[in-house]
Every structure is written in structure tokens, then in C-alpha cells.
Image 1 (spheres, rainbow, N blue to C red):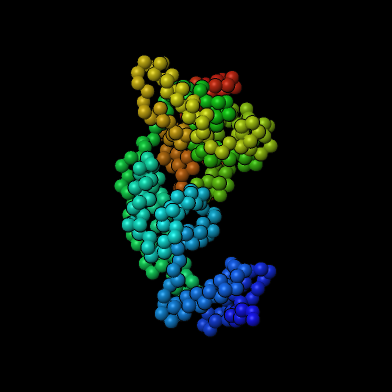
Image 2 (spheres, rainbow, N blue to C red):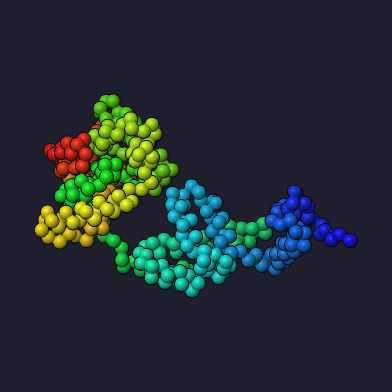
Length: 375
């Protein structure tokens, strides 16, 4: 005799599916994920028992952190740092992936924290991973509800952050340090670095800059770039104003690629912080000591791409540019999300960024000609 089939199971192709009317719940339609009838029937029995426990006793289904993390990633694709969250969840999976949501707390996260610290990870990096866990648990306790109206988690535990004692201090470049670094960079990175230090753009904004975002301003004989918010960290449209140096860099690469502003061998550059940057940084540090006859500062030895943004901001401040204008030029959140500026307003922004044009820059002939002095 053939095996009897439980009511509510239907076969679609090779896989058994649940199609069952449940009083007080409605119709359940989902795949069992198996072609084996006995396994499908066990899955159906478990689902029915989970439903009974939830409806009669208010018992929440036992969901794993992996299941919750997956739901979070699917629902937050718009988030600028979603790729980083995905990386954190992959790192966390070996520690808490199989654990129930109510089993995730400081105690079960302790080994993850210890291992990351022993690997030399900065406190801020560890805290970012812990913050992602905290966000998932808060959503599970406050927002996500099942078909019975129950939240995924009864109460979110307090996830403790580590005290930040090892944060790296920003290191704005001097003009001498900029010259030493930029002359060691490969040509394509030298252009990108020169553009970045004169616009205050972020690494991903420079690497992803596209010609379609350029807007001509004929009355001011210049152009600017308007980066759509979905490509910007704070999700606000980013106005990139060009000073004389940045404009010269843009004109130099114009026509080299139909879409991307900055490329290497015809392809987009994923990040400026690559082996070329690291090798140039090491050579520049040696040249600093030979030229200055004094020890190379640690900050210059380990100069980061993001320090070019800090350099731009520091130079704007030293030039007397107002805080409000600096926020606009650096792409910081201001509460005023307009991307429309009048000609006088643009003239003021251009005048501000031109105050930081000074010093020898770059390594190619086209770049070494840029020696504009501030007035």
C-alpha cells in the first residue's frame, strides 16, 4: 500500500507544498522544501504545532538570528552601508547564526568580541558589528510581527558597546606631505587624490563619479557635479563644487571614458585604498625623512584616503570659510536638502573652494602645472 498523504499537502513538480486552511489564521501556502513525503508531513505537523502554540499559548516560534539577519538584509537594500552589514553578519554567523533570537546577548557575543580584538580589529569596527546585531534585535522585538500578531522577540536585550580607546586621529596633510605622497602615486590615483583633496569627496564618490552627473554653469564658466543621494553616505544629493585645481583635473580626464570620470585601464576603480596607495605611502614616508632629516610622523606613515577629506575641511577652516559653507562643501547633513543654488550662491561656494588652491600638486605634467596661489 502507498503512504497516506496528510490533508493540506500538494505536490508541485517534485516538491511538496502546504495549502491548508487554518481557523483563525487563514490559508497557509508555502513550500516544505522537500520531495520526500514523510519529511514534508513532519514539516506540516511542526508548522501546525507552532501555530497551535502561538494561538493558544502565545508562544513565539523559535527563530534563529540567521533568519532575522536575512530578513534585515532583504528589507534594507536601500541602506548605504548594507554591504558592510552583510559582511558583519557573515562574520557573526559562526558565533550566533544558529542561536535563537532570545539567546543572543552580551554573553553569547563575548567570544566574537574577543576573537575580533585578538585579530587586531579596532574597537570602532567591533562596535559597528555589535550595532548591527542590536538593530536586528530591536526590530525583532518592536516591529516584526508574525501572522498571529506576535513580535519575533519578546524583549530586546541591551547589547553593550566597547569603550572606544583606540580611535585613529584624523591626519590632515601639510603641503609638503601632499607633494611627497602625490608624486609617488600612480598617475590615475594621483588625479583622483588631487580631485579629492580639492573637493572633500569620499572615496566611493570619487571612484563612482559619472559624467552624466556633471552640470554646466555657463554664466560662471564652470561646471559642478550633482551626485544622486542613493550614491551618498547620508542619502542626500551631494553637490560637488570645483575649484581651479579640481576643474583642471576634470578637463584632463574628459573624453577618456564615456561614463566613468576616473578609470584605470578603461575600468572603474573600486577603491583608492589599494596596493598602489599603500606602496606610494611607504615610499613617501621614506622620502619625508630623507628630505626633512627628521622622523616621519606616524600619521603620515599610515595616511588614509579619508584623510584627504579631512585635509580639505581643515584648509577651508584655515582659510576662514564659514561652518555653514564648509558643511555644504563637505557634503555633511545640514537639514537643507535642496540641490538648487542661485548663481550668487554658487559663486560664493566656488570662491570658498578656490581659497584652498596652493602648493605643488601631482606627478604628471598636466598636474604639476597646477600651482595656483591663494589671493
